[in-house]
Length: 233
Image (cartoon, rainbow, N blue to C red; front, top):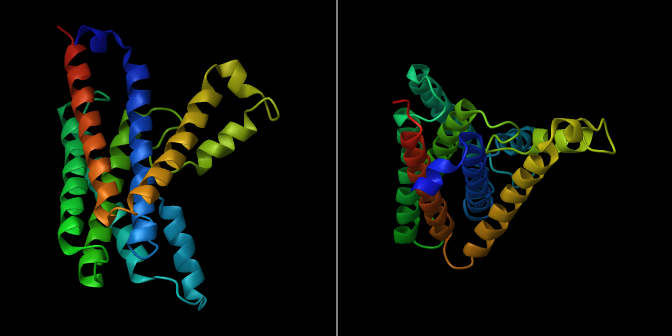
């Protein structure tokens, strides 16, 4: 325990947010490949899908992306409302919000494990909506913790900063120290998560969500224990 408390908060928060970024990759892989091509973390993807569907593009989902988008916005709004009362990056409120995300992911994994490999729309659409809400809640909470360049749900802006501030661009990352490494790890985390999520789909649709939920629960516990050790006397 003393070793955990010895880790600087900024360092631990970065590691924990990278783990959450990894779980987003898993969840998005499950949503896109296992729940009818719906992103539950990357809302940019859903907006693009909806835009193409509105022009009459064939075989593109509409209801799923809309529900995921609404769920995400609802989850983010709830997170923002709850965290209005928080004064520190990691508090009991932060822990409860992350714990809620973990419970949602594990609960939805159990639902998918029970209903079988190919859930019907009656099951898949509510799962999609709740996953979107979970990812919105996670994103709002991560935003409050405010680890630079690591939002846990998207990496487009991270990739932009990685390239623009690299030695081939402005070179600001080297001057700032550590910026490129942090951004690169965020990209690797979501990439690896998507790969793991896709691989777990070969076993079962719910397997990836179960792993994501367990990892989010672990992040919640570690973050809580570390924050408790850094509370002012």
